[in-house]
Image 1 (tube, rainbow, N blue to C red):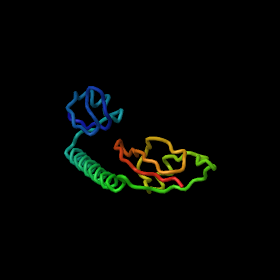
Image 2: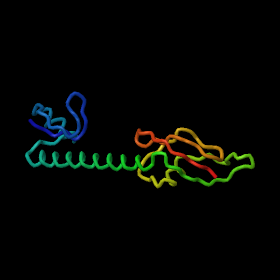
Image 3: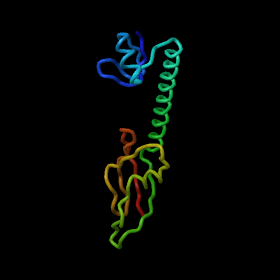
Image 4: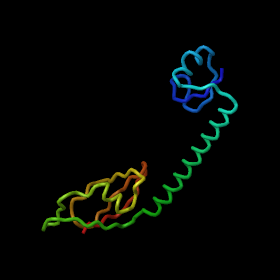
Length: 139
């Protein structure tokens, strides 16, 4: 019997794959546990469309990320914080402040080092496993 897997299953296949399995295995385990559905022509066509849409969306997101990384490379941002007379910040600059300064709300951002002093700092910004250098000037 042909089934479409709705979840990853060890030794059987991954989500979205069409697999041939024993009738009893499909009827007694996979379908009642909502791990798979019977592969009809309509369901196979829907799955292919869904898979193609997911691939297109992933490619579009990758292009957007590449454009964003090109814009941000070696960009200089200014952040204003309170500091002591010796130039030490009362609170270190964190990822959220850098994200808001760069208007990056939809990406998860990590910085290579914390910034605790006034001045110009070269840091590496990590967005989706890609690192780019930016300059943060704290005033």
